[in-house]
Length: 229
Image 1 (tube, rainbow, N blue to C red):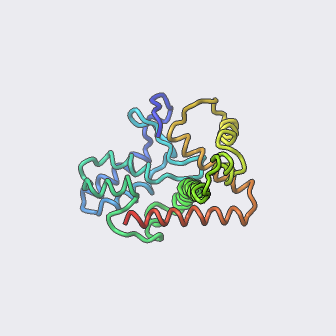
Image 2 (tube, rainbow, N blue to C red):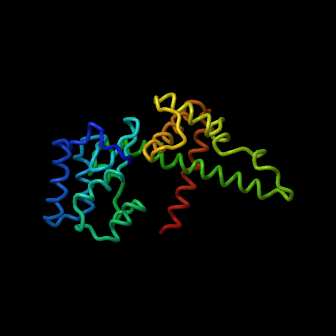
Image 3 (cartoon, one colour):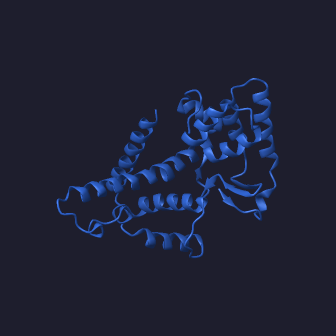
């Protein structure tokens, strides 16, 4: 989500209005709010929009669907109708008030959005945990030395995972996307960069290494999720 009040997507589409109307009416009729919300997500038609002072990009690179960002946007339309703690659990931890099967989730948001959600899950969420897992490995290696060496001798996580430093990769990303060089990144660009790194890794690393690193990131993610329960 980035601030951008001049984006041409600032007018909400008819399809999006339909989604908002469905959400409000379904909750008012007594349907569980999280079911109504997921149905509204299934009806939503815009990959990005400007709303108020913010610009929302729900579909990164036309492929990876950030359903929680859209959920945040839709929850603004029913402010006060969702229990506060349940809203916090959803927006901060991605937890629904009742457990929902993957098939149920897929049915409510639609097959296309579900496939794009999987792209986001592996390409953004798990990719972040790949780096975190490797950073943890590096720290353990560093701590295992009785006489610690300079940390630069061990190498950074980006170098280990992608074969290049973060600075080099960031410059390649900006050239690919036509972004100017800058010392700052918006949250939306950071998400896009992470997805770009995922695709870069798939394209440039051998398949066994890709599978191994992905499993490492997924396992690290699951361990962190278990701690939140």
